[in-house]
Image (cartoon, rainbow, N blue to C red; front, side, top):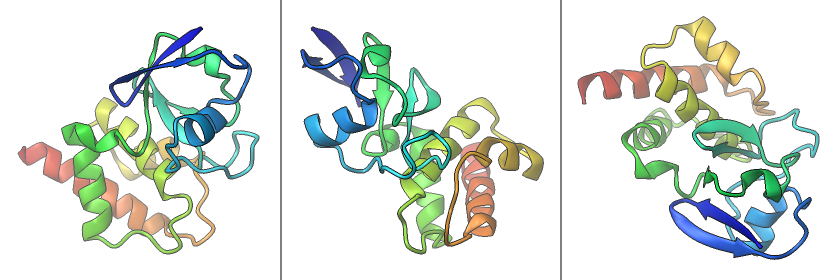
Length: 154
């Protein structure tokens, strides 16, 4: 039996330990905010946090999350960093089609947890594994700067 902490809730799983975390989150836990993109950890749509670090859930087995804290887009708003990122995304109207945005937000929140005043270079490096087919990269960068400014005054 695998014990997981997902968005602060304890969840038990006795199925295939090799199942990708993405499918566990979507199909077993019912948390559909995390998206399937490429299935090869190249696009970032499936990004979640594992003990605070951004990971690609499409290639991470459920067993790798045992005993660790998993945070999805549904739970990222629970802290001030995640809340600031989501508020900036809304304020600057970042989303176009929206498909990649849960992964983008998760990567941005992880960046701002470790670097509260990122440069454009820092942002580009942290977000480089997240692909946006609609090319909203300029708005994404602006939202990260906005969230950083909000956190600086909080």
